[in-house]
Length: 157
Image 1 (cartoon, rainbow, N blue to C red):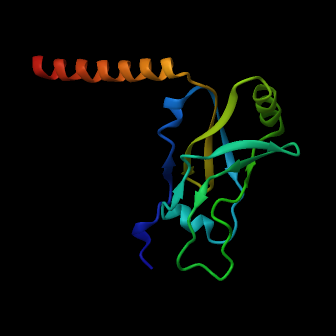
Image 2: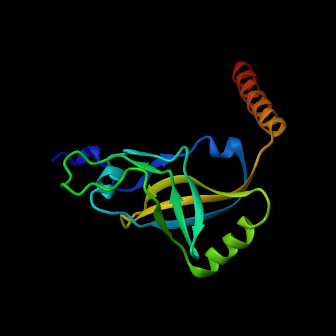
């Protein structure tokens, strides 16, 4: 087996649209409850979190719409690709998140999926408010202006 194709620590997936679509106010780190060969699929980078979000169910947080593709060399037992996955957080953090989610407009969005140096799968969650179309346009203008500034600075140097 070729170990070079697996990620042992570091970022596995990133939700790049999250910071564009949401004004992230706070971030949390949560563990993931995985089944079967899902860890191997994560290490192989076969995950998509672009449409994922977290939701409260029975006093616990679950990550929905996160797609972990089936591991090809896995056993006969293959969990559903877009199943709800339980998030592991401290009770104090869960209560803090619940208090803010109940407010109008707050959402809990996964920003990154990564492995720690100990080999644990973690997800970085962002608590934020959805941006309006005007805010998105302003973000785009700011980004373009910073790019143009960098180009001008390179020409002068």
